[in-house]
Amino acid sequence: MRVAVVAGPDPGHSFPAIALCQRFRDAGDVPALFTGAEWIETARAAGIDAAPLDGLTADDEDLDAGARIHLRAARMAELNVAALRDLAPDLVVSDVITAGGGMAAELLRIPWIELTPHPLYLPSKGLPPIGSGLAPGTGIGGRLRDATMRALTARSVRAGQRQRELARAEIGLPARDPGPLRRLIATLPALEVPRPDWPAEAVVVGPLHFEPTDQVLQIPAGTGPVVVIAPSTALTGTVGLTELALECLRPGDTLPEGSRLVVSRLGGAELTVPPWAVVGLGSQAELLTHADLVICGGGHGMLAKTLLAGVPLVAVPGGGDQWELANRVQRQGSGRLIRPLSADALVGAVNEVLSSPGYREAARAAATGATDVADPVRVCHEALALAG
Image (tube, rainbow, N blue to C red):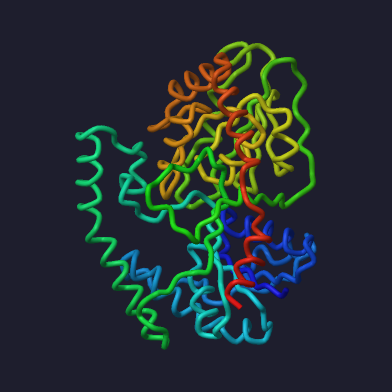
């Protein structure tokens, strides 16, 4: 099977797309990736055929967020339809926020599947609005709270639907969106929330992780716990997390004697690094085998990777879906949430998690639940066979 995988340049979306391409390749399929230019050589080095995704340069910042999402998707569909036609794939897999891939597939009458590299965020009649960070309400009061919040956000949901319909019509598609054949929900079951209206086409397939390097970060010498700091790669991530952690987390003072800090990041400004710390790009999967605690921004990729390793965490969420995810982690019991970020809050949360075995036990339970997921490649093959 020839499959085109479409995802934007944000590492939280492009890296899962690369990982999915690797799964297709290992199963004997022929994947091709369309993503941001900055990750083309990285994908090719991993053995994946890759090409730049056209239309990623923003020229519509004067529009509201909903219009940007849908009009940009329609524009990207038109810009990339020729490349997809030349590839002649049997299937298109399009990232959930790179909706132009699905629209381009529709224009070419090619079946398509949506890749969601985080929990399912579609509205539900049984949940508070996604992004609130709230657990589903219980009892009459809790259900009334959720219903009221859903009513307050319903206007925005309807406006987004109308904007999508108009954008689709402008490029010759039916206004009504038929949706994908399947939705690959690439998350841990522990990060999902049960809902009474789970879509029939949505399938939890487990996290899709890609390491952009096989380099190994050398952990400083010591006998105390290893604390990994992984700042968010998202533009909406909390600013200053790494700098504050290096400044306020000190072995024998605010941390147990002999503690080590390892900052794992893709890049950034130069930092003042104390002798008990190291900063650089390295394999996070390998690093997590040594970690006692992870401090991260709350993005899905690092949260899921940490829980898969059975490691507890402290989440410092920024914008986007990080608040929602950090609250789910805290409710699950595998970590603490900090907002706003301060030295006292960070030191207190880190020491609480390090000294309380329950957090690690909850993280290990989350890892165990990851075995109860579907194979994304098999889901795609079966969906395509049924559609044909």
